[in-house]
Length: 477
Ligand code: ADP
View (cartoon, rainbow, N blue to C red):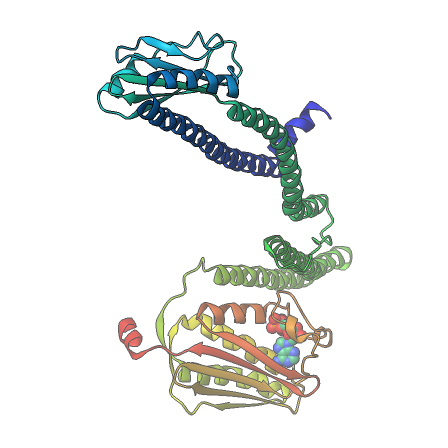
């Protein structure tokens, strides 16, 4: 493994999780072992102390019943029987001088503890100490106790079982801990790898996407855990980005197409006039046509800008009190002549008096776009009806209904997209921005536009706008 790879591994989440897991596991195991050690050693010490105290009791009784000589003899015999390397007895004066003892050739390094004697003289019935003697394997537990008001018994016992336990404990501790650390690291690594494998899948997919394959998706394991949620959200985000990119591509294709047509026309007119034009009037006509095409282009660009600004809220809408009833009536009057020219009957039904807070110019533009479309896409003999109604006093609804060419179900969800035009309406003039702007205006006023339509039977566009509370109207006034 290269150095770089090693450093990278150390930086991974899986590695850090493994370290944490193994660390916590090791510390917990050490604490458990320590508790066990304390428990066992105190048990062993307790048991040794009990044995030493029972010796003292026995010698006290012997002293009372049979005298000091019997005690001396018994101490020698007792030490002999137990093993002179295991137990020793000394009888001391109150000044700490030894006046009798068992065979202490093995224990000669053990001094008399003056502090212990002092404590006895101060009233303590017994004093324990544990000492370690150089070159002796076992520790020694020693008890000082008063046998009579003038005799102190010092009894010592090698802590063999303590040493045996310690040896066994050390062996078991080292082996078990080594094993446990390896197991903890292995389990930790396995669990950490499992936990981060989902994140890695997301990373791999993101890497493939940055390499240009937007169709890639992260596999979802249906376990419903956090990683699955991340993968699902990531996939949803990708779906959205993909849809947006497709829409942007289509929009730029449409835009390029819509820009190319007038520019081609301008160029064609100029070319024809240059090659064939002889008179001033022909040049004048070319200039007029060019201006007309340029106006159309400018109109398109301005509409696009207006949609963007309205959608983003860059251009603040003015907030005036609008007499909606009057505004709808005026619009109908305005569109009466073109409707008549086309042989379309335009009816206007505005029984309610409605007010609105908003931008008059924008609302006029929105309504004009819908009326213009309705008349444009309704063949001669058809009707366009405009109506105004209120919905629970909360919304006002302007409906523009026509008996025109209608919109197919497949086109219906897309007609509000910029530059989108249905196939059957391509023969009519238009750039596919009118509905996008109308919807942007409705939404900027807190409302929306919905549409229902049947091919060859007609369409109904409904603009819903929130009615202002009377306090708002007073505020604007
Ligand atoms: P356009 O300039 O093409 O009219 P719009 O954004 O106003 O652009 O409309 C988008 C498309 O929606 C139109 O090209 C047309 O296909 C369809 N459309 C809009 N209004 C109607 C309608 N009243 N009847 C039938 N089709 C319509």
